[in-house]
Amino acid sequence: MALPTLAIVGRPNVGKSTIFNRILGARVSIVEDTPGVTRDRIYGRAQWLGKDFAVIDTGGIDMGDEPLLSQITQQAEIAIEEADVIVFLTSIEGGVTDADEKVAQILYRADKPVVLAVNKVDNPERRQDIYDFYSLGFGEPYPLSGAHGIGLGDLLDAVFAAFPAEGTGDEDDRIKFSLIGRPNVGKSSLVNAILGEERVIVSNIEGTTRDAIDTKFTDNGQDFAMIDTAGIRKRGKVYENTEKYAVMRALRAIDRSDVVLVILNAEEGIREQDKKVAGYAHEAGRGIIIVVNKWDTIKDKDNHTMQEFEAHIRDEFQYLDYAPIIFVSALTKQRLRNLPAMIATVSENQNRRIQSSVLNDVLMDALTVTPTPTVNGKRLRIYYMTQVAVKPPTFVVFVNDPDMLHFSYERFLINQLRQTFDFSGTPIHLIARSRK
Image 1 (cartoon, one colour):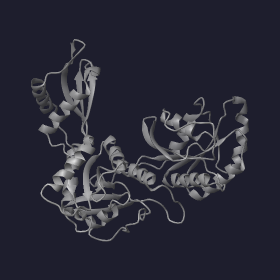
Image 2: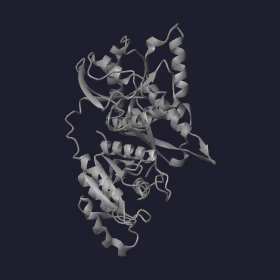
Image 3: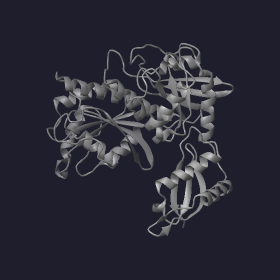
Image 4: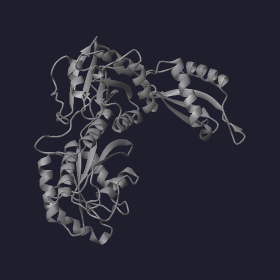
């Protein structure tokens, strides 16, 4: 299930980036007292009262003729489209402006829950001035001080009250997977080829698919839900940088997926954007399969071509050494028949649980082969290991000092787990805890 998403919108210079950073607890956006500094939508994840949610920061909305302001408006409209709840941020300085009224007109058409906030209420004596903002038509305004972090709790309470109710979990047995990658790597063509029917518009023009599409199907008795993330823009309404929008859609799809197919274009090779998008899936702990599409376009192949391409992938995606690689063609359907079984296997590995007694046998063998290191004359001691979660498989090792578990030895332990159990396609999380 996708994280509930909040978008912060408003005219320039009302403090959207400051509020965004306050919510995330880190200085993620550029903050400067100049209108229009934030030009691109920025996506982050936050937590409130133990519940995770996504936040979209936007540039200011303005209906002026300046090209930059027009682009900011378009990006904000896309953020509005992606959001479940919108925080309409205004400022006590200057009161209700014509720009605020124009932003309100956009939000009236959005048909999304809107929470009105008035920023820069640093002086308590000015709180009475917020009542002027009732005129915008969005109910009670929430006073904020982004500079001092005052009022955020009440605002987030209102936001969470407006978020849609969580799903019922009726599709728990259905394996959900998404296809992510740069525009024009053939995601929509792969969707159609896997399904064996034309359910998605396919074109060589970047940005043809307008919305993310979920398609349910069954293969060999296993139910799947396929999430196509090729959505780029709504024609006639919003246009923007294709790669930025693709990343936004990929992040949303990853949140909902059990397994992620990272699609590469064999014809174009590996680009920096490929690694960036794959990194999101890795950090989210999802199962991953690397799919090299358009393999039919590679001419003059020999017995070593595939091995050389695979070695190049391993070199460029070193953090995905656990991900299986498959070379396919959406056009000729080469090896596509193997994909559903691979997805089911990776999903099974994501949900694999190992008994603690078996884990500790593996741990003892590992300690015998490679003893723990010493740090400043003190030896790391590992007492026992237990599995605490799946999706991804997560293990806790109890030690005398967690700070002594260096990355290299952590990597060694993870490799021992992979050599003993089938965890192909899934990352493994290892957590060190002090034994109490």
